[in-house]
Length: 417
Length: 221
Image (cartoon, rainbow over all chains, first blue to last red; front, side, top):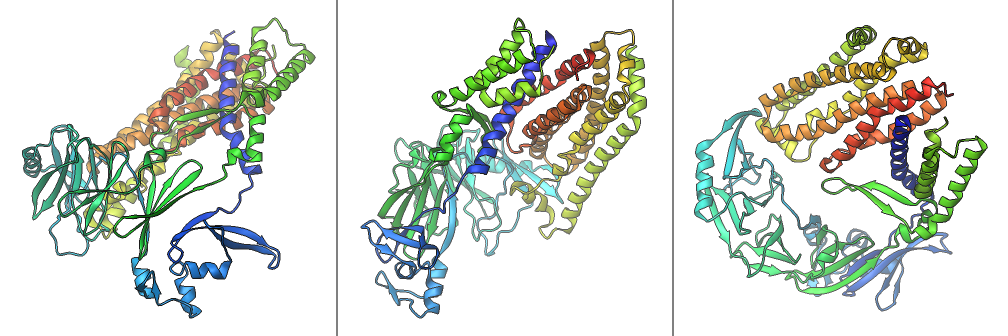
């Protein structure tokens, strides 16, 4: 009895392994990926253009074709003309680069200087580990690493002195000085979240921004070795739900509220400027922001879609558009997977990993499950297994419930005598 | 009787236990030699390793990742392969002791050996690590070590289970399932939500030998 119960547990482990691996193998074997469609804002048309690869029967190869929202089509050469900033080097080489774009005189250098790689932004908790407190008042162009690091405790802030990475101990005097400055400003410990840029690859330091135990928002930095702490007045009803700090002369960074509204916090007066993006909560947490000479482009990412907002340099909305991608789950191959597997398992990737089991539509896989159960019954009868044995019925139940996984698992762990 | 069995197991495994000890201690010392070299030679000076840690670098203990699995294979293999390949297990099963108690005395020996080695490794690691790093780093290291060590124990139990299986065909099939299953312990990142699953797999693995020993006893082919 006990060996058979253990066998059943082993069978279920084998089912788990197959539910983790088989759908992945199936997808890798049969998925046919298409080149992704792109949605790009044209500085010349002031409108979005969809870029696709289509088979050209003259050139006998796939070429990129653009279509704007009015239905006009653009070939490769025309695309260069409507995207002069993306193709500036090639246009310059062909001597076709325009002198002015959007009424402004432009040079290749101006375009290259203004272009910024996408920044990865998003709401969520900051990192509460050991952090550096940089000196904010410095003439140096590069950040110098301090000799200590700090941690946030339930009662305050604690600076740990380091010497060739050997921990010397807590600098009590500095810790008390900073803790007192924070308490004087009204911070209630423990700190819930802290946001900053603990990196040496920045040209200036603005310290850290903290959400305290009463959900108030504070700014802490070190100026000439002394703590400077300010309470930041929040708009009525606003709670900070995340922040991405920037190295910028105008804004401290992007701040997110509890409703996933996005604000820029100004350095001048700690005021908040709301971005014209109101559906962030409908998408995943990631946002990317890229910049060029004329626009900021924000992209929100959903399961099967990406929403693009283009704003001018004053953050006025110019256009927004959603691009929907074909999902593997909706493709023919993906749909067929529903008929083969009853469910699939995977480990989530973000944050604390979890085992996630996704069941498919029972009406699709039940036929294969019933067929496999009948096949297993035939195998058992052929091998003259006793049908008085409860565990033979349990094998059939496992196959009926877990389909192909259960069928293979009960054969891997045989139940003979 | 149990002590005699322990002694029998010790005679079979002593060189492999010693090799495991050398392997584990050597790996930990090598990790710290590498760390020290990075500190001394780094341009960043005293804070280089802190930066290395906090900027999602590769921590020095990453080199230990496969050690519990290798040790489990070494000790499990040295314990069960001679017994099974030369059919000596039949002699053991004829000793005047319940078969399950007999087999689990062998398993207990292996488990205690691996546990002792892991305790030695952890004491050594954290003694040196305390010299270098504050508590935050130790918590990171503990979170990384825990799944690997649990995976090591699971591997050992599965080795025992597979070794007792009488049929080579099924041994191979079990090994494929086990190989894929052990991936759970090597996922990396924050696996705090998966400890329950890891422990369930560990418990089932520890009982798996009862199933294959039963097949061995009744002469399944």
